[in-house]
Image 1 (cartoon, rainbow, N blue to C red):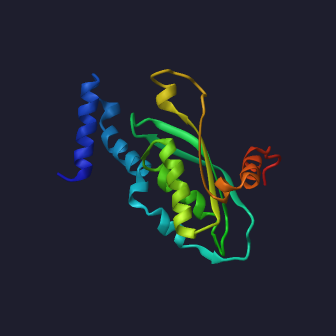
Image 2: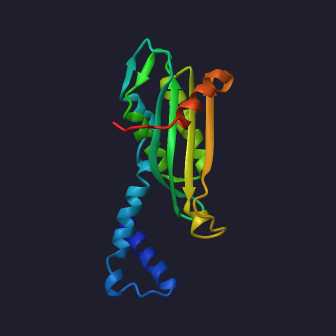
Image 3: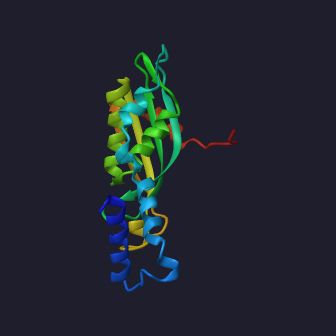
Length: 192
């Protein structure tokens, strides 16, 4: 039996265990839909973030902070398979190389599209940038809502978890760190 069929059979079994009829009209195609959704939601396992970043490295004399903020992401918590919905702010200080700006959100998505805990995802983003583009420093802040806290358990709606990972000059230099936090917390004003 191939993986898709095994997955769909597992979904049918889950539906029966919770008291549903997997053969009910509204549920007949559900196992295939869930399979397709999970393949999309976990596509990060089939992607290499360092390869994505490495595809667009360019020489540059810039040595000032580059920040991509408010990168929306959707993930699944590895403990309950429930959604994590958030934003990532990613900055680095170039060291002779810059990376194409679109690659940073793509790299965030690679890690978000895996079963995750937020703290680990934050670290993975920072480490991938450090290892691939060798900047003077990297700063990552992730802000997210966890449906495992909102839909079950403590049921605290709208609580936000914030995690950070600082590398190089962002960790060593308080002024650089303060500039980063000032920029990610600044009001946006009009969007382009």
